[in-house]
Length: 78
Image (tube, rainbow, N blue to C red; front, top):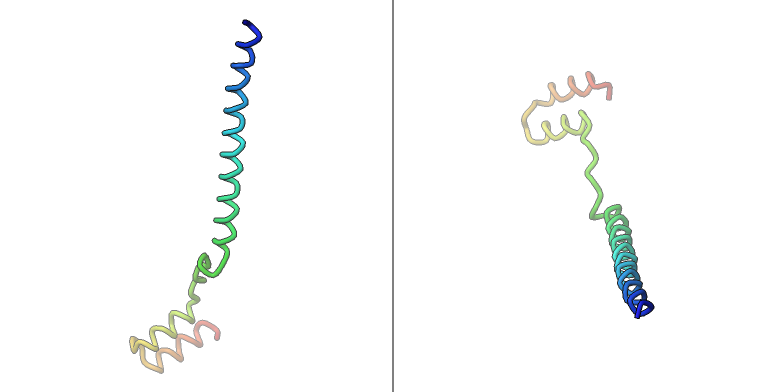
């Protein structure tokens, strides 16, 4: 009688252990896949624009004249 109760309790412990094992394994695989996809083309962040990039965009949009563009470009050291 007592031996049977001990086996019954051990069965629950093994069941919880198996659930925990498989749960952690699945979470690990998901994190690994997300990490590898995040570093691909879809996960690339746009680099920060430099001051010269912004200046070129402003000139292209017509916000500043050529003389102002050339002066500011010299001021930036390029």
